[in-house]
Image (cartoon, rainbow, N blue to C red; front, side, top):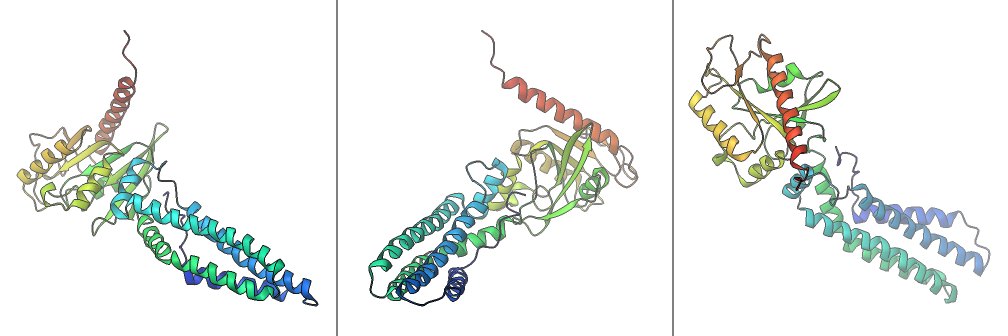
Amino acid sequence: MIFEKVPTVPTAEELLDKSFRRATRAKRGKQILDRDSKLKAEESMLLTAANILTDNLVSIVRKFPSFDQMPLFYLDLAEILVGVEEMKMNLASVQWAGGKIHELARKYVGMMRDAEDAKVVRKQAFGRISSIVNSIDGNLRFLNDARNKLRKLPAIDDSPALVIAGYPNVGKSSFVALVSSARPEIAPYPFTTKGLAVGHFTRNGIRYQVIDTPGLLDRPLEERNEIELQAISALKHVGKVILYIIDPSETCGYTLEKQMHLLEEIRKEFAVPILVVANKTDISAPVEGADTGMSTLTGEGVEAVLEKLFGMVLEANINLSSSSIPASS
């Protein structure tokens, strides 16, 4: 996931402690015999502290991925969680501080060489540098909070995605577990109290993602808050096909009427192909409105459902490619 490798962002106090400790060690390594050696020791302290701070601040900015080149799915989720413009502003403040410290260090090194006491000038420089770093403490704390939130986003890539929808207990997670080559990864999803299950498998050399959406596409959209609706909107960027699972037996605890009502809402919300599958065929009869049936308990019909989904993904890709070709005159 693109935010997973972003390291913890230190506070201003942590940065200053680190840089000043290293600066003190740098001075201890110098032999102070005369005015020139004292000057070099003070210069070493200042440059060491400034370089460590500048390097750390620049590194903080570089470790965050570029929001201008980010996939739309993650861009939407970042906007929901932390605000993209706020992120850019806070990163810019940290970038500015790094450049300013570098500039100040060069200025004060020049002042040291003309001063009677280089130590006094170095202390003045440390005071100015400390003020700059402390002034961005709020920015650093914002970025660390944002980093903690963004790292929880599910790992979804550009490979074809099958989005699974339907009421709770209709068999969504069972389907994900059946078709995935490995046990589905349950990734924390910061918009609901539940997790987003992301499974992966390969068919005919193509890697697919199958995404279960507990807490999002499992109840009427009118019951959603604004954040949940935005999260649902973000799913539009990755979903090639939606598999909507219904339970005609109603042993899931929801009537078939409610299940079909949610289906109509999803159809209005998503402009992607939807395959409607009746699960639990081992205990229920065929139902009108379903494209096919299966049983995630016995496995019957699961492979046929997959084949239909693959065909829909292929057709969607063909239609997308055709629409991008200019019409001949």
